[in-house]
Image (cartoon, rainbow, N blue to C red):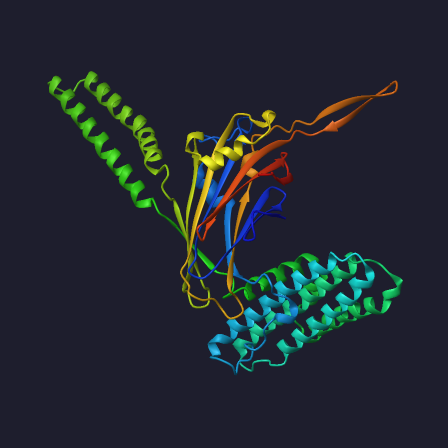
Length: 456
């Protein structure tokens, strides 16, 4: 994972997608800009990549409460009892607690797996399993009698039990192997067996579901989304230029119609009666109107919308539907002269052989947090933006070839693949400060090969 600074991170998400993560504080405003420099040979331009289509299909935003310092011992359990607070708050508090356990467990498991010394690894793993057991007991200490609330509890309990078991099985699978710590490994296995038996005793999952890995995995993904209610924000996207676009289309149509009517009236005045020539002339006039109306509308609209914000994301709490923060988004093809000086200077630092003709795409996102305070236990919001690069490689050549070499008297050939490089500059402004960083994304037709942060 690559750090732009302490608040912004760029990493590979899937085979052909990247993820940008940064944090938002209460009442804060931030600006994020991404400048993609795509080699001309990739075939990306205004004719082959529509900004709106790309935005709606391949740019995804995700926003949720976040705590970077959240670990298992710090998970708060005081809110999960129905007797504390309003009855209507039970689901939100339960989800908040469950979400904290999931994030904290994943963070602690990831940290433990980085330990390669068995003498340090297994005591840490044993402590983790004890802490997870305590948190699950706190959750199960109170089972709500209300049938509706009990269904929320069962979903959270089922998911957390399964997720904890999976995390510790992963720990056993990937941790260092050592016969000296057989007792510690048995402790981890016993915990996993007890959680599996607990779910079986509660009849949380059917036999058919348990026997099919795909069914049980997909069910748990559904339960995970259910416990994110109130913690992960719902998103509403508005098109900011829809009415303006209608106005432009209507104005162009009105002007064209007025011009056509002028030609038609002139044509009628020159012919005393309906003739074949008049019919042919009217046909040509209306044909020209239909031919040029769409082209003229498209050209005028592209000029008008250049530099204008296109969409607004509104993130709301799924619990009370209150707006937490908003984002104003731009996405457009730009010319090199539109680049800010600091971005242009970063692009100029490329090596001479990499300074090839390129097409530029600019993504901008202005964030504004409206909420003055967040839920208990959270002081930050994590915003994630995912860019799928699949449309960028649509026109790439498969282009595998051979590299020949001479080994003594024998000639050998080694298969090589065609690779491309995208230069990406990320700028980030918050609290009166601005940072900028250039990245080199190497990819082929099927996957991102690597992401490299370039020196300043």
